[in-house]
Image (cartoon, rainbow, N blue to C red; front, top):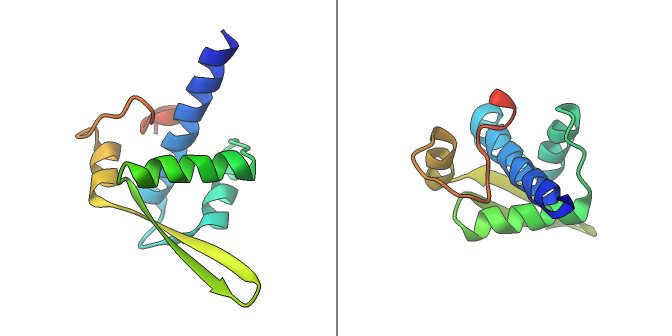
Length: 104
């Protein structure tokens, strides 16, 4: 039961990342901005899980991550791909992502 809850939570968190990038961002967004948007929507997520979700979504071609470093500070810009937009629109299905979280 706990495993089902955790799996459902991961699926929803990945969905929120897709929703934010598809519906709220024009172009690319800083990873920290996306994580803060999730917090504002009531989806608190730690850095490790957030990075794991980004890796999952990038590996499946739903988002692109561009890593930048300015001096000692590293940053990642996130942008949704055409495949990610298709996922959001329901054209593509992935059991590991809920692009309809919160009825959005």
